[in-house]
Structures are given as structure tokens and as C-alpha cells.
Image 1 (cartoon, one colour):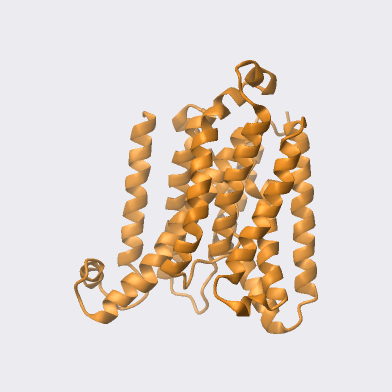
Image 2 (cartoon, rainbow, N blue to C red):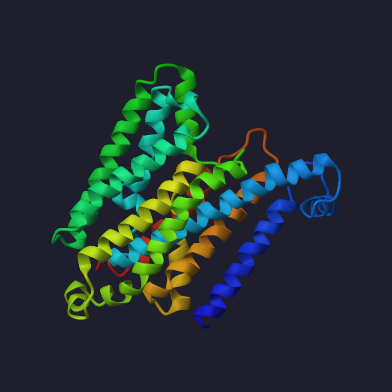
Length: 329
């Protein structure tokens, strides 16, 4: 299967999942009514359900999945480790910490976009730290260790904030954010994060071609003319923008950045530069599918998207770790 064929197949699947997510739901609206409403027909109630509830939620799920899938592929290519993802370098934890700070100090009352803004600021702060480290001559292992330390520190500060929450309402908001969900997302939310996803996508396009040379080793990549410092900063910046915006709109959702590239890798002949965009599309498909299943399964209380993805992703992560050549050999 060629790269273009794979991209076309995954792109068509993503569009199909998006359409299914817009047409299907827990309400009594039939598929025919939903389809008519999607094209501007039907009654006003049907159009509101499709255009203001289902479609924004589906687009948010697709965008979050694509961002996390692409970020995982970028980080795995940079660090040459199939278990790497943005969470490893502390970007996700820092974005979550930014959101928790806004909730803890009550800044979220200033507007609907306050929490997403602080989440993106947290991701950008982590990017600044990691970019500074990546610009000096340190190894990939040292960069991973620094990211793990940053992630642990951000996670500890977030736990401290929840432990000292000023009231139960603030604590409830923090916990809800940490569980991850795209429920009640609007088109305005998507418009807000779209520039960050676009900037991250452009950086990914510029840096992904260098990952093929990096796969041969840092010294070999340098002899081939790759600027290691610039490539590291570009990849980390792209992953941070994509992940920060994803966390800003959905909260914390893990494992997509590991699972999606792992599934796609054999189809691109393990070429890290060709892995990014197929992983993005597959990540979007996985998250959209998971969210659709949550909407269709009747439960007394809605299971959060982040919880469901973790329940499925954690065993897959263990399997990948067990089969990885770098583990236990």
C-alpha cells in the first residue's frame, strides 16, 4: 500500500466517522431527519441538535485525535522510541496544570475561553523549557529524562492544587477536566484552538522530513546536513502546539499518541517521516469512534472519553512495551 493510498483510505474513514457522529446519537432523532438537518432541511430542533450539539462535538473529537496522533508520531521519530508521546515530555501535564490554575484561582469566571487559554499557556511554558534544552547539545535520553521530570513536577503541582481546592465546586471542575471529554463543545471552541493546530501542522510539515535521517542516528543525521537543534525545537514546538490545543478543548486524553503510530507504522515501512499524517488521521478516527460509542451506549452516568480511552489504551501500551525491541533486550 502506497503512502497516498493509505492517506486516502484513512481520510475517507475519518470523514465517514465524522458523518456517522453527526447522524447518530442518543436522541430520538432518526438518521433521515439528521441527514436532512445536516443539509439545512428539517425542523429547527433537528438543525440545533445536528449543527450545535453533534457536529461541534464530532469535529472536536476528530481534531483532538488528529493532534494527539500526529504529536505522538513526531515525538517517536525525534526520540527514536515507539513508547514516546507528548505526555512523556510533560507537555500534556503542563497544559493540564495551566487549566487547573485557572480553575483553582477562580479565573475561569472571567469567560468561557479562560481555561483553554491557560491550558495553552501551560503547554507553551513547557515548550519554552524543552526548546531551551533541545537547543543545546544534549542527547535524546537526557531530553526524555528532563521531560519526565517536568511531567512529574507539573503533575505534583496539579495534585497539590486539587488537594488544597478552595471549595468542592472547584475540585469537581478540576477532576472533570482531568477525566477528558468533548461534551458540550461549540464551534467557537474550535475556532479558538484552530490557529494553534494550524501552526503546529505547519511546523510538523517542515520538520517531519528530517525524521528519516534522524532514524539513522544523530551523528549520521548531522553528516547528512540535518540541524539537530533546529529539528528538535521544531518537533517539540509542533507537538506542544498540537497537544496544548487538544488539552485546551478536551482535557487530558492519553495513549492515542502511542497507539495510532504503532498501528500505522508497518504500513509506511517504519519510515518516521511518512508516519505523521497517517497517524493523525487514525488518531482522529479512534477518538471520534470512541466518543460515538460513549454517546450510543446507554449508561446512568456518562463515561468520560479520557477514561474510556485509557481503559483501552493502557493494555495496548503494555503490549507495545512488551514487544518493543528496546524493552528487555
